[in-house]
Amino acid sequence: MSTERPGTLIDHFSVIEDTRNERKRRHLLIDTIVISIAAVLCGADGWTEIEEFGKAKEEWFRRFLKLPYGIPSHDTLGRIFALISPEVFEASFREWVASVRTVCGEDVIAIDGKSLRRSHSRKKGLGPLHMVSAWSTANGLVLAQQATEAKSNEITAIPKVLQMLELKGCIVTIDAMGCQKAIAEQIVERGGEYVLALKGNQSKLAEAVEELFIAADAADYAGWPMNFYETTERGHGRVERRRYWTLTAVEKLPQAGEWVELNTIGMVQCERQVDGKTTTESRFYIASTGGDAARFAWAVRSHWGIENGLHWCLDVAFREDDSRVRDRQAANNLAVMRHIAMGLLKKDKTIKRGIKTKRLVAGWDEDYLAKLLFA
Image (cartoon, rainbow, N blue to C red; front, side, top):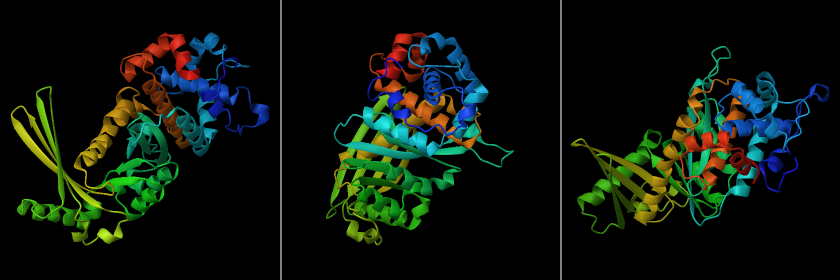
């Protein structure tokens, strides 16, 4: 590993302990990890493709890795990643993220879950693996993730994700599933602010917030501490108008005292005009961010961005939903490698193309691949 530099992927993932039987080890663990990350970076979606990529690039890999027995087979790759503890792999991932993340003032950390649809196993009685991720909107990076067996388990996964994060100077946004008093308290304890969506899981609170906005609107907001912000976007034959209201009269909310540092309730009205048809949708929130409607709007819009910035990218550019890796630990670790690859590609600004095109370029241009992996 002659080109190893402080802070590279090799540095961060070399600390993972190899738990395999020493007499049966042929391939170095770090070699296997680097080959796999590189292959995923360049378009591989499973163990067979990673093996074939490794064989095609074996001579190039020998510039950086030892490879005492060449490239591992796809069966060997699957077994190795099924043995690596996801918690240990995740810890190395977080250390790497901390080394590449740019501190750029206030950040919105969006927390949301996504199911890997084809990772289910009828034989083992397992549903699709569900990953809850924390997404830095300022950096375009996954900061941490936690696997669960079902979307319904997000409530237990979110506190584990929050425990991994430094939240000082950050606004944490979570969909209605995570609108829990204990979660709000944990965010504040770790130095963050929160914007939490309201739906049926907090039906009484959601109804109370909606009723306050109805009362304020009926009074034309006279005597109500209201702030307003509006945006309009046009494109592709569509007009989207978003209106944001914040009220700081939380003392009128019966449940306000049960939520730590709750100081704002928010409403977002989305109006879409497409092909002459208009649809309107309203959403309600509780927040600890103060009454600035523009800041509230920034946090809400940033959270919506996780769908395009992370989930859509994983589905379209990385074909994550097509992954058939069903061993839980291996599937978890492969999901982390996709997050690593996406982070490397988003971090690079030398090629002004989308993630899918950048993956192809990395496969074609070995100098570009070396820059991504080892710079």
